[in-house]
Length: 581
Ligand SMILES: *[C@@H]1O[C@H](CO)[C@@H](O)[C@H](O)[C@H]1NC(C)=O
Ligand SMILES: *[C@@H]1O[C@H](CO)[C@@H](O)[C@H](O)[C@H]1NC(C)=O
Ligand SMILES: *[C@@H]1O[C@H](CO)[C@@H](O)[C@H](O)[C@H]1NC(C)=O
Ligand SMILES: *[C@@H]1O[C@H](CO)[C@@H](O)[C@H](O)[C@H]1NC(C)=O
Ligand SMILES: *[C@@H]1O[C@H](CO)[C@@H](O)[C@H](O)[C@H]1NC(C)=O
Ligand SMILES: *[C@@H]1O[C@H](CO)[C@@H](O)[C@H](O)[C@H]1NC(C)=O
Ligand SMILES: *[C@@H]1O[C@H](CO)[C@@H](O)[C@H](O)[C@H]1NC(C)=O
Image 1 (spheres, rainbow, N blue to C red):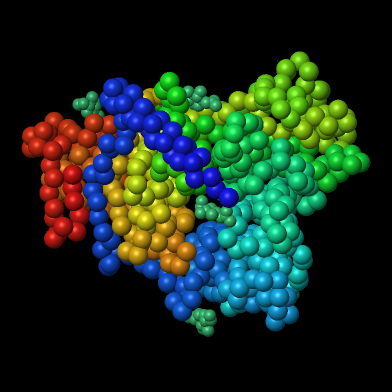
Image 2: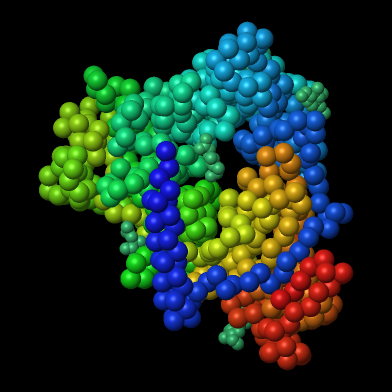
């Protein structure tokens, strides 16, 4: 039962908080929500490739793996292998559940649609061997397939328990990673849910798992992504926060990690991680009352770049407020070094069930320090293992790089759903910007940058370059991918039932003059003084010619027109097909 009064009080509180941050930030002149897209556009059909899937039923696309120039997409009963360049189907792997499995599933009360085989996990064990898992009518199964010239040959079958969810809608994630060479000697790391009822969430790599039914390990998680980097596999998810002991429940975003060398502990710990740790991710607007975007929805890959002249590895993520509250979305970035530092910091603990969660005194932490990567975890002392069983949560939250969201959107209309990044696009003067592509739940894609990223560690200047309406039917964008092979620069946009491939930029279409071109602040676009056109540096490079571009300020004295006319420019071109603001 939902308590109406409680919900209302919560709404009201949130509303007041939003008002407060609105006025506080307005006073500082930093309220980002006023950032408008420079261009709002529709797709030009002739510049778009589409993969429609099966048009007679809903496909439930899930992007599973990129294999060079090909994309492997899991759907109902099929894995499609499609060309990234053209979005044409090259091959397909068909795998239907048996009549018996479907019958049992139906008897258990699931619908005909649920009692199908939704392919949710795929890993390339080698050039030719695919490891594939499907929900198989609520009885998950994994299979090895050999790839031959024209088809995929079924080799053998294993139980999918703990590797693939029963429910096709469950948010699971998997990554193939290994201590040595991730193609030939790897293991599958999965964050998913076991059991028909979905009551047993776990992070699993055969034979190691998180503690079963231990809310301190995982508490109703929604897994978002997983990444392999050096000695660790990282998992990003949101879950009910055990450390939040006020009334009601709340969800926090987390990053967790396990060591790829983990072999489990001795005796009763032989099937348990000895290295599982997790920490809260802090994506918030600071102020007297910080305002949190607590529910992570998506992450980018690890991006390696130069920020204010310093080399860093960062991960971008999309965060939202809870569904039943004032709608707000934000993009925050986290440095890998800050994540590691948080895992090296104090643990959080609770003396007994009614006391507050506090930092654990460092001097009392057993040696060797729990949660580290060690050569042979089976020799770890009991003390260390007992400690890690109950203390998986770090005390400090991972701070956001730049200390604040890079882009945010509050109010009704839409929420952000996913993100991808075209990293470190080089501009005419040699500085580099990460171009962010953000999907929304209304079928739009937003292209944005932090125009201060090249020069500052703590200042954010959000620029929304473009907002494109991709799916006319407003289908939520579920994943995004940049295809950055030379000459095929495209953004792949995925919804539940369609995949589109759209241009990454369209400099010439949006800007006809020098000042318009510079005003776009698009790292892909610069005014070519010789050809008198707004052009891109395809294929990557501004070596030949004279170009005008100013990403940080959006105007340049070299443009003959008055700079003031560009900032207030608002014209509709091509019959209102797009708007330059
Ligand atoms: C679409 O799915 C239906 C079954 O749901 C099948 O009969 C049909 O052949 C499929 N079409 C294509 C183009 O794969
Ligand atoms: C996808 O199809 C292409 C073209 O047939 C093939 O070269 C590639 O190996 C396939 N990838 C996988 C993982 O099946
Ligand atoms: C699958 O491929 C592997 C290696 O290419 C080969 O050793 C094996 O015999 C093949 N299995 C089947 C069933 O084709
Ligand atoms: C999975 O995540 C999506 C997007 O956040 C959410 O709408 C959906 O409810 C989640 N699925 C489940 C089973 O919780
Ligand atoms: C999160 O970050 C904000 C802004 O930097 C800060 O004010 C707040 O105290 C942090 N919250 C936590 C839980 O660390
Ligand atoms: C772990 O193993 C590596 C290589 O096998 C070795 O160089 C290193 O000294 C070992 N570390 C410890 C703490 O035993
Ligand atoms: C952009 O314009 C600002 C203000 O005129 C100037 O300080 C800066 O050097 C310019 N940047 C480039 C790359 O031209």
